Length: 386
Image (cartoon, rainbow, N blue to C red; front, side, top):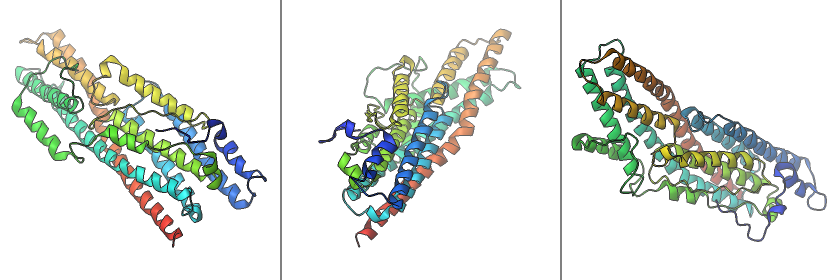
């Protein structure tokens, strides 16, 4: 996000809703009427909601951050804020066609379009995770506790684990140009036929072009500035609402890219929000926590920071080492060790089974809300220009 002020300085953007908007309520600056008070309360309500909701997101324990359930809450925050922002725009449609509001809102809608590709890429990433979930299911079925552990069951589990390993490493290869990388599972047995079939699935499902870059898309979405004092005054504070929603939109898209596998997941996106916006504090806190997670040694070359992806990597790694060490006839203590690891893997599997479908529906809903909001907003602007 660009934060240049082009002539305005941060002290001119005072403490979030009340102080910012009080500048235009001063009798010297602007006359006070009922409509202005109502408009101010709407903008302040949006910022209060953003502050409260992001504080809730930033207050979670480390094991919950970037989990499927946390990403679901993040999307819920976006959808709620989007609805409140849409209501503000609709209730102030008479000023949308006036400068500088027309440019501010039009630029926002153009940036929001770039989020559609991000949503498509995230849905592809969720489908990729679903394929890994299917491999986990094969392992769990093969090592079912109700069946005796024979050579056939272990062979079937090892084949599924190898397919899972290949699939996840293939995803990592698509997101890095490094010739050498840390491999989560510690070994990489090439099976060209299975490897090519997994790549074939990936190419058939891909919704964005092979040259598409999530990193560049985020840079384009973040191409905006904090509002200048004259813009706040000229728009009766609506510039503050546009900036607030722009920051929410950018953070949500960035967090999705950080968590879910997609092309060119560069996370170097800076959130230099002026301290005058009190919702900036929880946003900064979340950004720092996610970046700290990305810097952990075991996560540096991951294809996504989603907690469940780390769970897949960890449980599959243990299971691969365990099944490789098995000799037949299998000893009782070794079988017990396998059963214990199966229970660990089942927890990861169940989390994905219950969480992926609802999460994909939310991503789809976000896509449609972005389209609808832009269409309705541009229509309001066009009517104002008639």
